[in-house]
Image (cartoon, rainbow, N blue to C red):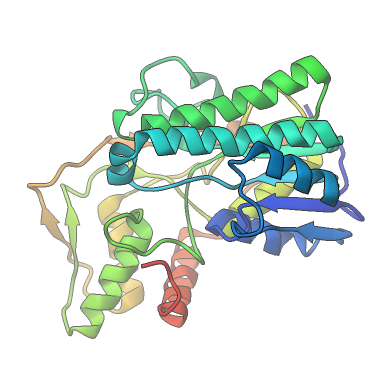
Length: 318
């Protein structure tokens, strides 16, 4: 459902402002003429402690809230620390959403993840595929917590009439990403490998599997723009997918990164490693119908992410 909500003159809290997505949202909010952009570091506010969150929200009195805070990690971390991933993410979202209701926040947007969808969801994945099948076992703890966040927003909307909405971003990349080869996602891993290869005088990089799986990617700046758009224009029960609507093979993606780095386009394939899901693409029909579409091409976004890593290697998470 279309709505109209202005951020101008509002006190806006970005939970998780030091993460890649939260930082991009805080940057994008600078264009909205907000009265204040509220943030708090982990040292200042432990989001897993209900009383601390309630006290902070009562003191700061935000008008609008973006819930971008979460405990995140790769497959190994999810598998090793399932209790931490489920408990901490449940506490973070429940504490923020409940405290927002208690202090009368006007509007709240909860950020989920594309991992909420069943492992064998139809492609492209529509919003109504949620809870229609089994989850991917390697990240089900994180996914279950994110699904709970969606349902909590729906519950507060249904019981109290709170204007709480949810958005599900696709695979994101960009400035402030995690470049740790053990835990990073595919784009930062490829960028780091390409930079290392170039500096070592090598001509190409190696990727796992056949290179044929298809994946969708969105620049984090476009994601932030979509979050602001939804906060201002959307008010309904169902979550909204936020993605590019297009996908590429992992081999094509690696070729693009190698080209940016000045390497040869031939990729070494380690076919002893698994491919994973053949395709993962979310439907972008709903957000397109609402009037939003991405502005940054994959090529431009990759170039900007590559340049950011080169300029910030000393402080990049690696």
